[in-house]
Amino acid sequence: MQSRPADIATELLDPRILPIDLKIALLWIIGTVSCIYLPFLQNTPFRVAFALPFILFIPGYLLIAALFPADDDLDWIERIALSFGLSIAVVPLIGLGLNYTPWGIRLDPIVISLIIFALAMATVAAYRRIILPVEQRLTIPFNEVKEGVREELFPEKSNRLDRALSIILICAIILAIGTTIYVIVVPKEGEKFTEFYILGEKGKAADYPTNFQAGTEQFVIIGIGNHEYRNVTYTTQVFGFNQQFDTSTNTSSILSSIPLGSYQIEIPHNETVERRFNFTINDTEINRIQFLLFTEDLPEPGLSPAELVNSSYRDLHLWIRVT
Image 1: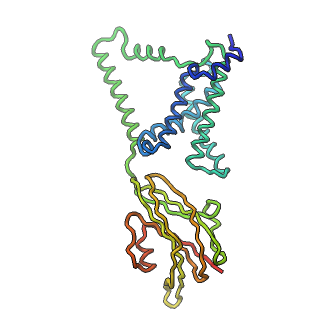
Image 2: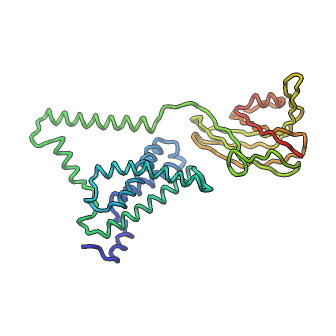
Image 3: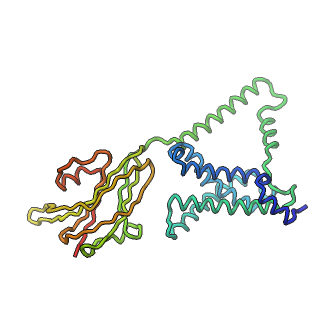
């Protein structure tokens, strides 16, 4: 007997009647978002443990649940296999779509897009399942699985040796799964480095302010990515140089320099911060903008411009023409 429209609306709005598999998927999404954005969970193994199924399994599972709401549409092995396969297809397609939007492929847009997709598929899956007769709806056969595992591992006619071997087998499987999870969520510490880059006005590595009039305000976007496996306080200093090249000696020298600004920021491990940096140059002899990045070891006062560049942790520059 199919549900009436009033009953369908009631069941959709009642979280107690929501199918258990959809509840688990939605709770897992909440856990993933918590591990991504809550400060005390961001740098823990839980972030990876929750994020992997969120990316590799849940989108595909909810899509399969929406497409095949009946219990006899697919068996559970097919559902699980297709869930992984469709997730691997859906997530890159979402990323490809984001690449052509103003938001780009970044953490926040990807998380929000996956949440919207998951909620939409969960809603469709719940609706399609509820309109089916109760006996045809997809259910998780907990009792059947439990009895099947018990009968397989501990048959009624088994002796003590068989039971002991079954227990050892279960422990070995649990140990193997635990070891695999540990290797995934607690990876070996890799190379330590810091990203340091500048972007143009459109947030891309192009359209830099290289030719402008004196006294006009210009800007670039400075990006710093921390991969040092610890929180790092970075100091960015920006200078304008008048640098000339001597063809007779094949050397260059800095004739003068002016400070254009500086700022300090603390960045957690595996985080990237991009900040707009505004500057104004009045001296038409300035032909190079030098961006210097320092960690906790700040330069000593009184250094020459060349020594200051050499003492920096990372450095970038732009050749400019000021008229």
